[in-house]
Length: 134
Image (cartoon, rainbow, N blue to C red; front, side, top):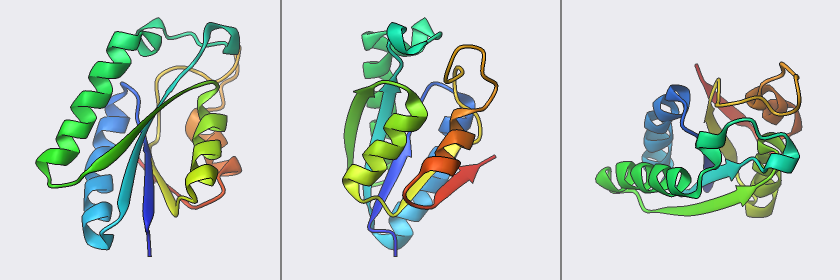
């Protein structure tokens, strides 16, 4: 049923908690897993310097990929730049993803002063179902 699972990840605890559900889903459906990290560019309103550091992103992706590898899951890794919600939805569309698995809260806001979360925006824009882990 779920051939391709997209797992957007950031440095939030919620994203780390969502990893276990992604593991279970991928194992159960023998799905392809794609891990996505979106770096907000300064011109896009990115407020979190820690998340945008190339070293921090590389370390995060290595840790997450290793966590899946420990469970016997091979994952593809993508790193993109832009506004997280839009990039996540664009990548889901490009990959023809069957589901997006993500935490209920991520690091940072999406635009200057807006309180709508990345997760809420993804839910409203995604080309496929979104499984949100509280």
